[in-house]
Image (cartoon, rainbow, N blue to C red; front, top):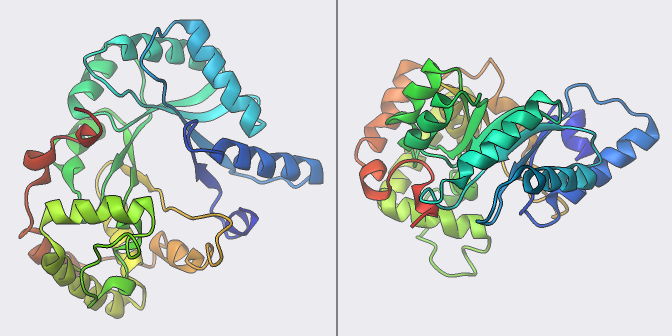
Length: 301
């Protein structure tokens, strides 16, 4: 984590349900404080993902206090709220309490994760100020552009995007490769998840056409396929940031630092010709909005 901070990548995304993620950040934060190292701009974004049940203030506060204790912080930079079942309207109770706790200084930014446009409209119409919504957004999954993007721009809500590199599938590593189907080939949960998304989107053959187009664009800019794929999403309206996964503690986990920095460099500017070449391929894909529903609908029955 220190290597990322030293490189200028100072925002970490996690969740209360992501195993030891909050504890790992807490260990890092604790060591940083003990050593006296100040880290300007260090931000920790977590999520509150409750099981269905009563959402009174005590329940919500207890969950936030647990996250703060694990992360070794006195307040939370950003809480991204997720709810599993829209039919259970208690998500509005939870958000009401979260908004109150934000006013009391416990939360800096109140955000959402995987909420659809309809619910985003419902929540904001109640006077609850939402900073961002974390959703899947990539060259494969462009559902945010269908409805959510316009609403977010109009209401000053930013999109934080995940899945932008499709778990690593949007890279040179898979260019010209035969379709991976086995568990040995799809060896992480992310690879398996995003391979299924590619299947829904248009299949491996079309995906190879996309990789060829991206690799051609990448060569003209002296960068990687991943950098082009990330830049494309960063340049979309309402996108405030792209979340790039890193398997901390795994050998080589930091090898893509330069790619990540290149992605957000102002020197990397995709031209109209670049966009046309990419979109010639993406236009041939299936309509995931019609197939899967709005952002996050795949997580709900």
